[in-house]
Length: 118
Image (cartoon, rainbow, N blue to C red; front, side, top):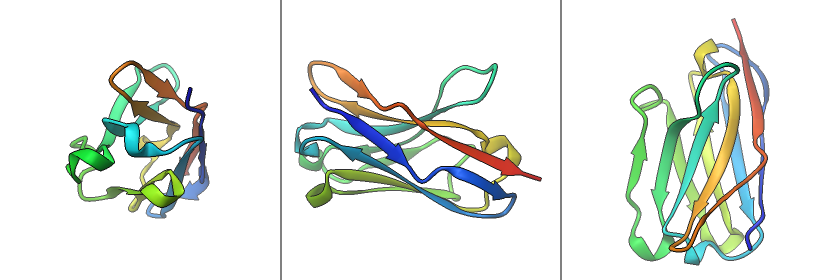
């Protein structure tokens, strides 16, 4: 079992920045990938960014809507994945969820709310 705890969300003005964290209850060495998703009210959950597992390299991927503004990174020693979000706009308002993918199953956190005001 893996418990994931997201933090770092909040209310920010458009153009501002936030840094989200996702802390895992055990080593992230076993993950195939760690992924950030988001879900806005009334919308489907959407992919935001992913980073390969520690043993799989450093490949990262971003949704087109956040590419160039968001940066995903990890600190394996702290079992934590980060999402640096810059140049936020109102369309980034959503619940941001962390996903930990292993060969057997995926694990999800409860999410952290990001609200961007105009």
